Length: 360
Length: 274
Ligand SMILES: Nc1ncnc2c1ncn2[C@@H]1O[C@H](COP(=O)(O)OP(=O)(O)O)[C@@H](O)[C@H]1O
Ligand SMILES: [Mg+2]
Image (cartoon, rainbow over all chains, first blue to last red; front, side, top):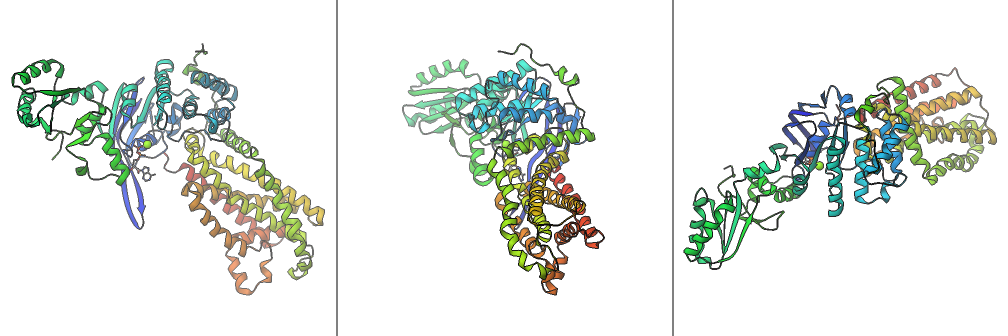
C-alpha cells in the first residue's frame, strides 16, 4: 500500500541573515501492507508530519521515491489523491462553517455527486458517534467530536488508505480512549489501511499492528511492539537495599544473571540491571541475597516499555528527546545522558544503559 | 450500530464519480469552492452590508466635492469622471484584502484538506476569485446605478467595457492577495506589505483626482503605475472615447495583470506539490 525509498526533505530556514538547511526527513524507507495499522512514533520535530505530507502529495520529496496505493506520488499524484484520505494535525473543517456542509463540499471535490456524499456523510456521522451534529459548527464541538469530524472528512470518498496525523493530541484521556475505538474500527469495520503518527507511546502501543520509530528524520526501528520490546535485553530489576554499604555485594549477586558486572548499575541504595526473563531467575536471586545476608527494602521488576526501546535505539528517552527539540530545536545528545532519568511512562525509575547502546 | 449497509469501496468505482481534469470538472470544482466561500460570507451580514455601503458613501460624500472642480480637470460631468475611478478603487482595494480570510482557512487546515483532493489547483484559487468578482460586480452595479441617478452620462457599451476591465483588475488583485496570503501565512506579515503596495497605488493612479492636474514629474512617475492606465481606460470607456490609445493600453494591462496574478496564485496553491 505504501512503498517509500530514501525519502528526503530539506527546508531552507532563515534565522536573521543566516540561512540554514534543515534536513527534516533524512532517507526514510517505509513499507505498509494492505490492511495494516502502522504507528509512526517519534518525538516532536522528528519528521513525522513532513513524511506524511510527502506521501500524501502535499510536499514534493527533495529526494527519494514513494508509491502510495500503487501510484507514484510525484508523477501520478491525482490517482494517489483519489485513493487516500488525509487527516492533518490541524483538521480540515472550518470552525465557522456547518459540519455537514464542509463534509459535502469536501466529498464533492473528489468528483462525487451530492446525494451520494450526503448519504455517506450522514452514515459516517452515525458510525463516528456524531449524531445530530450535521448542522453544528466545529467551533461549538468538543475536541473529540471535532477530531471525529475530521476523520469523517478523510473517509468521505472511501479511501483504501488513511493517514492520521496526531489524531488524539490535545484530547482528554476519555476522548482519546473513545477515538482509539473508532480508529480500530476503521480497519476492522471498513477494511481501511491506516498510517497514524503519534508521539504518545501508549497510543502507538494500543493501536498499531506495527510500530515504526522515527528520530531526527531517520527510521530507527520497525517491528511489532512486542518484538521491539524484546530487543531491549530483558526486564529491569530494581533492588532497593536496606543497607547501602552492601550495594557492591548485591551488585555482584545480580551480575550473575546478566552478561557481566558492567551491566549492573549502583545508585545509592538502588541496584539495577536488565535481566532476561526476570520472572524465572528472580527466585534464585532472592535466595542468593538472603543467604548473603543482604536485606531488601523493596524489589521492582519492570517490563520494557517503548520508551526503553527508544532509549536503547537512540540513546535518549522519548521524553528527553521532546524536551531537547522543544528547547533548542535539536540539542547535542551528550547532555541528555544522565545516570538516572525519571521513567517517562511508568513513573518508575528507568536506567540509562551505560555500556550498551551508547555509540561512542 | 445503525448502519446495516456499510458502503463498499466498489460503490466509489461504480460511477458516482465525475471524471477529473476536464474543463467541465474544472468548472464544477471551482463552483464548489465558490459556493462554500459565498456561504461563509453571507453568514456574516455585517461584512456584506459594509461592502454595499462603501460605494454609496463614496459617491454621496465625495462626489459633491468634485462637482465645483470638474472644469479644471478638462471634464464636464463630475460623475462620469468619478464613477470609473471609484470602480477601480473598489476593485483594487476590496480585492487586496481577500487574502486575509485565506490565512484563517490555512491555519485551520482547510487549504491542506482541499489540496489533498484531486481537484485542480487553479480551481481552488479561481473559486475564491468568483466570490471576490461577484462582490465587485454587485458593487459596480450599485455604483453605476447611483451614478446615473446623480447625473452620470455614459453609454451602455462604455459601461460594460469599463466594468469588464475593472473585473479583470479586481481579479488580478484578489489572486495576488491570495498568493501573498499563502506565501506569508501571517496577517502580521501581510498587512504591512498590502499597505506598502496600496500607498503608491492610491497616490499615483489618479483614482480620486486626475494625474493631469499635477506637475510634470508626478505625471511621469505615474506612467510607471499600471493601475493608472487602467483608470484612464475605464474613464475613456465611460466617456465613450473608444478610439483612444489609453483604452487599449489600459485594457491590455488589466489582461496581463490578471493572467500573471492567476498564474502566481495557482503556483502558490500548487507549491511544494507533486
Ligand atoms: N515548512 C517548514 N519549513 C522549515 N522547517 C520545517 C518546515 N516543516 C517542518 N520543518 C522542520 O522539520 C522538522 C520536522 O518537522 P515535522 O515533520 O513537523 O515533525 P513532527 O511531525 O515529527 O513533529 C522540524 O525540525 C521542523 O521544524
Ligand atoms: Mg507533526
